[in-house]
Image (cartoon, rainbow, N blue to C red; front, side, top):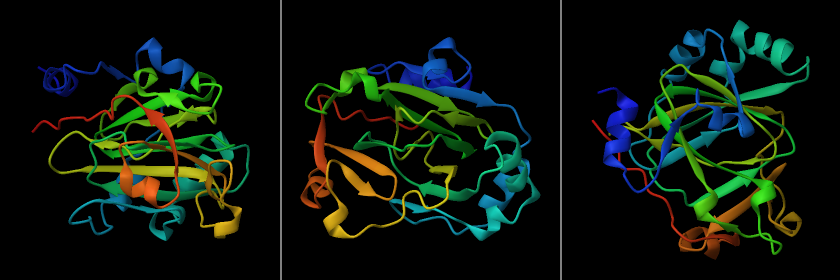
Length: 220
């Protein structure tokens, strides 16, 4: 039994797809590049003891020749910050989107929970039943389209997840409180919190996701 099969058996409540299935094509595309240098550099960063962390720009990643290759080959020469999201997470909890595409590399295997902006209700909320789960093996890289809702990856094993995040520079940086309006949560980041995620809602996030707060049960 491969890892995806084991993961699906542990999570009969939600269908988990491979990024190589046709179902992924509306959310993004698979990028076939050698990501070993990125993954090795990411593993040098201290791993959180609990919870998850995100840094928008990590010098350890941005100084790599592969980072410049990403900018030239896949970003049309535009500046692209290379950061990392890593730690422990296994629930949907929220979804976000940007006005630019996002590049993800699975340093440690993970699950992405995705939806489309077109699936939002007229009031700007989302039924969690419209969320689709995708598995990424270590080293796999994808480009997630700008109209795809996404958030913190879910771990597949007890060792947590680790995901390199490439975005237009400045994205996800903090903004002044008075700028937070119409779901805008950070620079170029619009956020929907799951209504069950009370800690995020209490911090001012729009309670924009209803229904199941999907949980991914890790294996191994």
